[in-house]
Image (cartoon, rainbow over all chains, first blue to last red; front, side, top):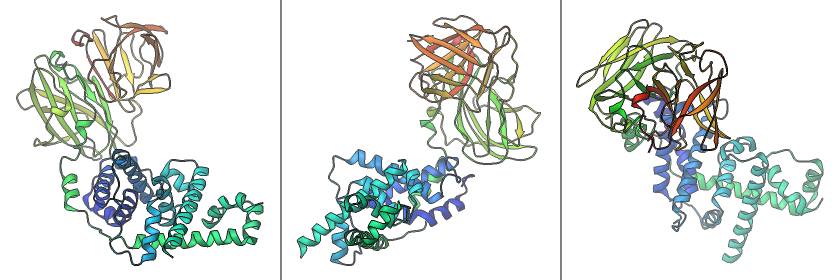
Length: 161
Length: 343
């Protein structure tokens, strides 16, 4: 990568693209936008490979950090437009559908933190680095995300009973 | 401890973070808190199921490949350039070198000067993978050059360069075409590489190979004479703001010339000279520091070596040209007589 080696880039892409895409889809709820932002994310590391500091974070965390910023920019640009949720095509049950709906009602900051913790498994320290927030805020943000999600999901389940 | 107090810590405990013993004891014995943690576990499980529904694709899409394969630094037009609008008036012996950060991690460094004159006026230190547009001023024409450092070996440097003459008038890096066919050159340190310019003229390149990042720029004196002004890796500060940080970039000038620093803060350009010139204010130089005030605003310039020789402190002259179209950190030199008139 540091020498703009296409083979190295291909390998990097192969190893991390699906996770970055899933994260961006989750962030934007827009598959087309997510694909565009994913390209921008990988282009950034292609163009500026030396901006990645392996002593500071892993490559996945670095890519997700870029993706998060690009998603945040996208949200700012598109905040006046009603985001049309686009769910995974293969949601398997009504139960999952309810959960996906509940998840989409969370504020982007909360959803992103929750995703990075639950799906990517980042520690609080890593999340602080990726999200560029203090450690204490990671803790409170995850708590807020979980509590809101729990209450919304419970409420939805009550309605459908 | 109450559930209300403990509830924020349920989330942390669920994540395996350490919590205080009182909270741990409460959560262990509280059915409501344990129920909350069970709910978190279920939500985590649902999230992972949801994530697993997403389709995976592992090869680089053609659209992205095309963007990678295009001009590798197609971002360049957004980067730094210098002396647009003034190029036609700048002497042929004066070069202004744009600076960007190195873009690769090769162990070796190439420290070089590149310009329309054999003697180094502005220099740079970069690693393999560096790829940049340069704009040089000529008395009757301008030269745009696209230079890439392909590789740095032990005793030679492979370069890819295309230089073209442009008509007199304004020229900036975005006007220099990136898709020109470049020519490969092998530079051997100790020699002066002469690169022919399409349309006439020659560019000169001198340099050295280093196995470490050079601390002082090639061709610039570490201890300047009284008739020299040297800006070695200078940093220009206004209050808490860094207007330019030329890490790796340097220039030096003599009487009759001005060193120019371009900023990234929309502040235009700052010109420094040993003698008074139109629009300039007196500044106090003391070894590596220069302090000055323009329009009531305090600035400070710090260099990595003494700025000038002679008895310290001494006066040098500074001008800020807010109308200069420079965008981005850059450093170079030009003749005082060819400095643009501030608008």
